Image 1: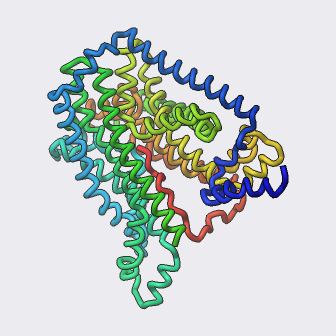
Image 2: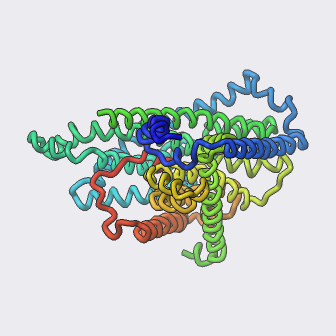
Image 3: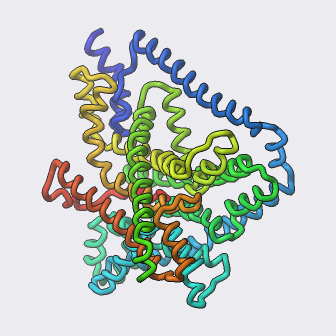
Length: 290
Length: 233
């Protein structure tokens, strides 16, 4: 093969490679006939192994009578769906309320941590690191078991939502802090060049850009909140996971109910993650273009 | 205070369970997650698809749902595991998905030229990964992998919901017995904070030790924003 032919054939691929900047695409060549045969063989083998594992799992279900259609079609019945739907509504409510309070709170914590006042900054740092380092379950238990001992009680909804807010605010504070730091230095310089003070620069120049930068991360924080809302199982608040538990105690279809519940969570979170990643990719593409 | 003095063995056992759950879950997740990441970048389509489906399922399922499904669901299909190992299995399955994502994006940070250079000196797929790409990728992955570790520490608390007698379970049981809520909360909190802070300190040490532009490796003017940081529950 002549050198010229070689370069023309590979030029578009090389350009594509440089555009995506990813090492995963050069780990292997476009395979030759022998390589293609080997890849085909390994593909068939690995597909067989994967299908075998799935079949073994299904067979195990079958052997224990869990594949009985009667145990699964009930999830198409209106009353079953309505029952789980009430749980889903609870989950969405809890997540929404927690997000609406936690995100602004997280922004305030981030600003406090970045503040020039040493005392405020250290208080915020300790607060953030504390709630990032302990499990939410512990905070839930504090509201469920500890505070009632001192005569402080909350409705179940708030026993779930307040711990979610405390933990999520701490993690989103770090998201906002990263976003503020990721705004280009030139923006600070430009802001002070046109005579803006520190506060004005922050409010009118830095924050609008930082909030846009962290938008995808905030959607992922929503995924985390949605997952955390499953702790309603512990505080007996009627969200999806707890509703599933109630359903199991009535119908005795344990595997089926929890599989259906998990699939709902996976679908919701998958959707949110997709949106976040698509948004992130679009913003990165725009940043490269400009 | 006597609540602690009278129950030292129980508390120590709780701490031991928490440490064991975390370490076993994390180490297994590192192994499984790296293998999954290799599958995701491999030239074999079924392996790529299987690893992608795995990641999408296990990073989107809430850990508590997964643990409940494993602990209470598996016996119904004829698989009996001790609750402790159900916890380890759940933590491993969930953390492995996050490890896989981090390893994959770590591989993407290695300059393309390095992989090309490795290929041009005759290394194959595994040789390129093993000797050139992965060693460099792991260096950029230390911080994300520390985040996965902290996620595993925090996740181990959920095993108390499936009756593993780890530190959250022990302190809440003692709490009901002695009504020493604040004290018990502080004990459990200290264990988790100690483990997460210890983990991130160790991560920092490793990061500095393997950083090529040490000792002032931190002076990168504008830090890029990693969207998926802290996305683990």
